[in-house]
Image 1: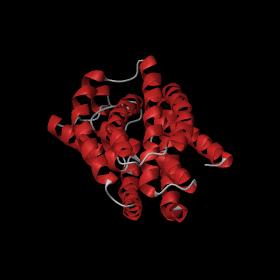
Image 2: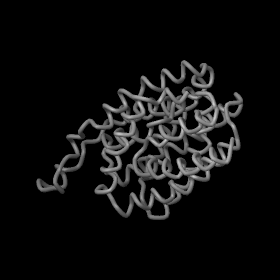
Image 3: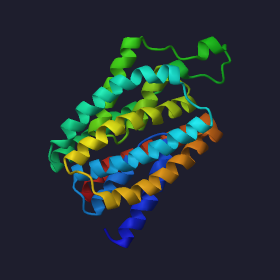
Length: 258
């Protein structure tokens, strides 16, 4: 890895950390950056997980310091997410680079649809019809558990865009966007803790690029968490829109980088 590559990866990691803390999709920037430095698809995927782990640890710390989160509702869904992450990471570590790249690209299509789909249950102009009517209807417990199991599989296998998927799931489960971002970082942290050892054992982590990227995403994650809390939904929603645009642009030309 050259000095220029290190600077690009570090700066890209910082931006990705902010994006991940406020919405999700930062790995759609960092995985291609790692690929530019000469890593194959699955190795870039595995190396990226180390940075994701650091970034979500700092983001979770930032949210916790500001009292954002809902532990009573979060802890029960961590188990199905962790089981799913183990399954997904094992599967992803066994496929070749080209197949991973194709799967990565195809999965971005439904991700884009989900990220822009309107949440009718939470739409309101500030509760003009009353707080009870403005609160989203929560899923049954078994639907929530199944959803987090699926999120765990996706996060363990691909990871990129999982923040957007989690925000969608948490929104449908009845969380406001600010609280959902705090819960999201904790869930991704647990998923990544499960996935990273799998990629390490399969020799799919390169430590120098991982260290540089981790430094950038760690700082960006803490900055992004505080920006999200201070700005609230007024700041988070525009970030979501920007991330969706980035996803669309990456869909068009991402694989030219590999």
